[in-house]
Length: 140
Image 1 (cartoon, rainbow, N blue to C red):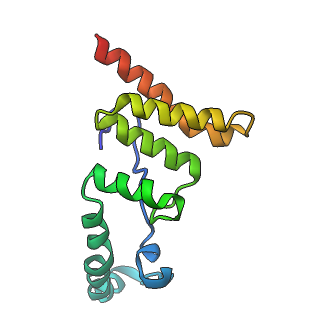
Image 2: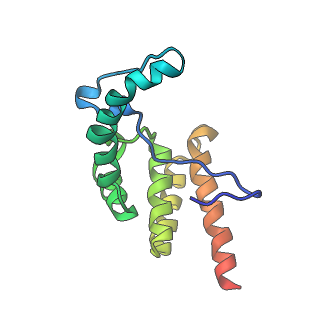
């Protein structure tokens, strides 16, 4: 992930650890002070090994992420709404070199959302704007 002064970046794909557990079992680690964290060490290591690392392995590259996003949509393991899902699918196609397909995906979604509240179109407009900016940079 790139970070610089001009733009702030943050992960767009994430899953709270409770969504990685069987049956989406909600869990919190409770501790009191420094010693409390030490007491949780084994439990945290267990959770990382059994839930977080397999999640990371499952999505080790963009094509793996794309396959799940396109196959499972918003029912998949990520906390995304439909607009974010389409924006991320378009962005992945773009950075993987399938620029025309990426633009078409985003443009089709924007047409489908015409007349809907701005909050549904915003992520798509932002991705489309960035695609245009990158296309201009590539032309230079």
